[in-house]
Image (cartoon, rainbow, N blue to C red; front, side):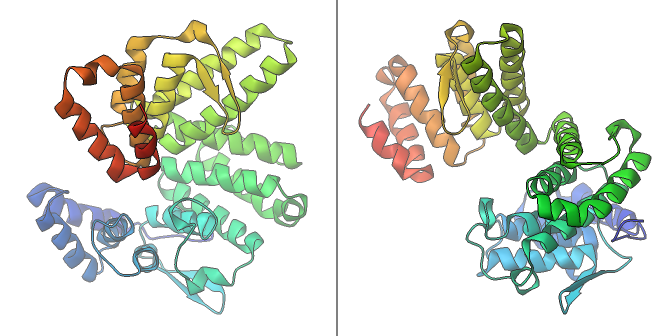
Length: 355
């Protein structure tokens, strides 16, 4: 049995949320947001999770928004922490298990949580403890809901465990039991028995692939990055041209899965791939000019600007750099895009000023 289990009352909470909010006032209006807070106060676990999302992403202002969102995710998951132990209640929303695992994995390490304010429930935990609990939370979510984010989190936790021999040896029994249970619940995973670190890495890859199939953009990006590293390696060795070609196709395909869902980083990288043939692994680049397709490049640079984040600034920059005639004919558009760049990423703005 998973470490955290719920009585599936969240299904009634979902029906209540749908009836009183989703089907009544929608999801994106201020009215809907206020109703979510109200429903969360009444004990609805689904609303508590949505309230946490709004706080986490600063849609609702809270002074210590990351720790504030964490408390709401704990409430939604029915989890309390005392003396370093986490205890779960039957009334819980499984998606919040995954998001608490996300906190454990990223707290003061990377992503939005790199500079997170102190969270007492996590602060004193050793990395090994955090990995173990992350694994348990992700698997507990998957036992109820096959969420793509939880699939990706399982992959990340397994990869981290496999990267440290000592931690792997300590956690192997728990990892093995967890994977066995999930395979029985989700036969499509087809995870082999866990015997060594390499098996753990294989299992991680399976979860990443499953998350990507479900459209989880960060899994797609991770797989694209892995293919980029493989491409540079294969090109350096000059041993197998067929494998190199397959890897390049996979690289573009993974980026496309993410970019078509308007993830700015992937869309911009795919735009660069089609504009210059560049494959970048995070530290080094190689160019395959036979893949250049200018019309596709423009399409994906534009897709990177649909849902703004800091990476969108690079897409605006690349549109200006590679398609200057568009801006020469439309100075209002140039000024508009320069304003976006300045707001999204000032460092890119300085580069754009030099074009």
